Image 1 (cartoon, rainbow, N blue to C red):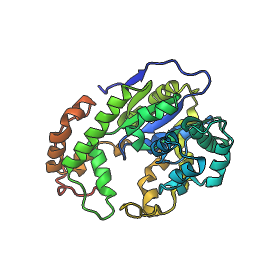
Image 2: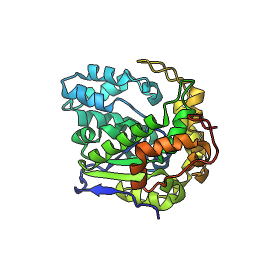
Image 3: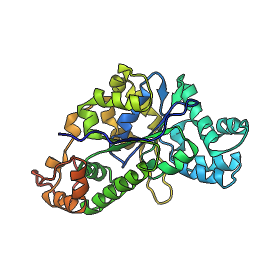
Image 4: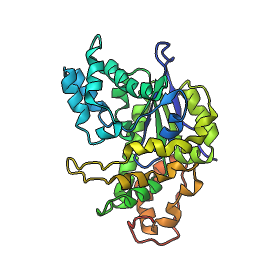
Length: 317
């Protein structure tokens, strides 16, 4: 029997502002699929990943001017994915009664809801799984959805996208996966609204889980989100550009970025689950289980051995 979604909600929602979903998790865990599902709702839009929110909060709380804060935003290499001119953000910020982190973020996100003609907005940047308490401190309406995927499939996906670099050992991927999930769970216990969702449950029981998520977000149920894949290509086209090299990170070609999310243009596919059973070597499975087997079991994932005999650390095909 699969575990139910973990849900913590300790405060009544604010009557002044609707809940804002923040989709977070370890990379390659299915957060993009959930983003597209929710973005297909006629009342909600979720722009591409931002990657600057924690730094922007710190900058504004340290006294940054609107002009300085915009520089913090545009310094990230993902800024181009947002297709937004800095002057458009500045104009909104200069019109705020007080330049504080919460109002600044709300006015920024409103650019995208207005652009899509929708009343509500959300956020999907997986790495914010480390910053939930900080974000809630300035956006009380934030509701965090932590997507979790079997760590062995996460490892396979990371190895496939290593861009020619030596793939990290299975034990290292396992330790990172476990550390980030444990840290997220600790933070989740400290914020008002936190939900854990297994990727595998979203794939196999899509509608029941999306109904629960809609309820969590106080979002009226609309079955159109089940057909998210029909508009996925158009939404993902925002990322069809090379991601520039920065701070030691290599350039990521636009073609590779699009290919990494090609499956979002199809309905949820159970064949994407538990590929480690065929694609991962027995040595790597054992190394992963040794490092993170306790958490795998806790989350309802089975321990096991691989059957395909792939070379250790080999990228999955």
